Structure formats: C-alpha cells, structure tokens
Length: 50
Length: 231
Image (cartoon, rainbow over all chains, first blue to last red):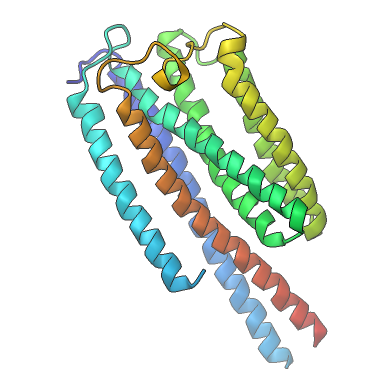
C-alpha cells in the first residue's frame, strides 16, 4: 500500500536504524575477538611463568 | 548463568525477535496504508518510537542495577548496568537519526532546538559521557561508584524528555499514542508500535547478554593478570 510520496526518506530512516545496529554488532564482535585473544595471551604467560 | 543455558536463551530470543520483526514489517510495509498528510515517511514512527521505548526501558534497568551496586557493592551489578547502558545508547542513537530524517521532510530542517529534541540530545550526551567516564577510570570501585551516580542523574533527564512535549508546546508533535491520552492513530496503526517494541526488547536482551559476557571476560582477564603478577 506504499505510494511514491516521501518513499526515499522513509527508506533512509529504516536504513539508518539498520546501519547503526550493524555497526554496534560488528563492534561487539571485534571486542569479543580481542578479549578471547587477550585471555589466551595471559593464560600462556601464566603457563610460561609457572 | 551456565553457558549452555545462556546460549539456548540467546537462540530463543533471536527466533522470537526474527518472527516478530518479519510479521511486523509485513504489516507495516504491505498492509497499512500511507498516512494522508505525510505519505510513506510516517512509517519511520514504527522504528523511532519502539527504539526510544527500548532505550528508556534499558536506562531504567541500568538505574536499578546502579542502585543495586551502590547498595551492595557487588561489581556484577555495575558490569550489568554498563552493558545495558551501552545497548540502550545504540537505540537512543537510532531515535535521534530517524527523528532527524523524518524532520527533514515534515519540518523542512534536519534539526530544531525544540524542547523534546534538545532534552533528548542532552540525554544522549549524558549516557555517552557515562561510557566515556568508564573508559577514563581504571580503578573498578571508583569507576562503578561514579558511573552509578551518572546513571541516576541521567534518569532524571529521561523524565524531562518524556514530559517535555506536554510542558513545552514547540516543534515536536504532541502525544499521539492513546496510552498517553493522545489523539491516537488510525485503526490498526498503533498496535505495530508495541509489537516492534517487544521485538526490539528481545534484540536488546540478546545484545545485553553478549555484552555482559564480555564484561565477565574482562574481569577474568583482570584476575588472570593478578595471578600472573603473583608468580
């Protein structure tokens, strides 16, 4: 039931919400990887120093 | 929470969220008619309003967790408050972005220093400041205490944001939803807002659970480091 009037900006609105969520999810994923690497690094350090 | 249980809850929330969003977007784009004056762009309300409901719900949950930290001194409450605040800020960012896009067409400007917009921007800045404050302080208890105070302060602004469209009649539309004694929307047009709120709450819960697990890992790294220094 969508007509052409103001359709482009409606798309921009939904796209903006989607992009903000995707950026946040990607930042969470990157942080997750960094934390896993850091845990591995510290564990190896402890094993080496034992 | 056990990892297996947590993964199952995450999966269940993801399925509920996907089903709800599919049904809602089908109704929003393919069933509901255009609004008489605004055309298609009024549909932004179905992201804008549920996002602010989700964001504000999260900020109040963070307030409760901050209060729990101040009462008990347990850092797990502080970690949870930080996770919820960060996710809620993402939804608050969506509110500002979608509102600006809607305003560009309906008002002819991207931004107006209207009471609702200004108080919402102040709210966003307070919670962005909350996250910046946490990065600036290394000592966990001091960080938790100051963060809790900012969280309490931020919730006062939320009440001002909520009431601003009643206290000051400026650019932003007056209350529309029937639950706020507004004029209401057309038949069937209001319900998708609440269903989308539920879907966004499921999404926010998923993000909070992931973010909380990261906070737990950070604490695990801190304890491993202390162990390493003790050798």
